[in-house]
Image (tube, rainbow, N blue to C red; front, side, top):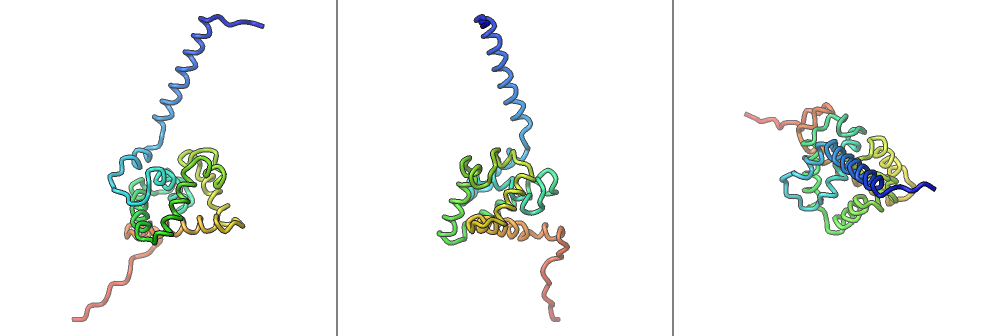
Length: 184
């Protein structure tokens, strides 16, 4: 068996450390701009935590368009507006419903829940649109009512939070509500 000298051990160890630190720095540099968008949002959220917003920032574009944020045509500001609207909506829901949503978001945000319930080994932000779409399809068509309720609840919250903004109406060809006629 060949032994390694202390000098070589230190040299290889330092090289490995530099590789890990350099890789981590490169990963941080290549992180999506939306992470900064989520972290530095000045809106005061009533219900959604930072972890919730990270999860939802990945889910919202897929739920709305079936595509990932960089291909969806949704700007980070639009996704943040959806999150603001969701937060305001959730804040008005009954306590019991908010408690159920809190459990869902905590489950989705944690590694254990993400792996066991969603089947994702990577973080939501690292998952591809196809992976997130597959999770949502599994939830939608699951025999477990809990996953169905989670899917339809999230879908309803996201869609209504998006389409309550007049700017989103043009994408679906909706010109807005009818204007009342004024008699003269």
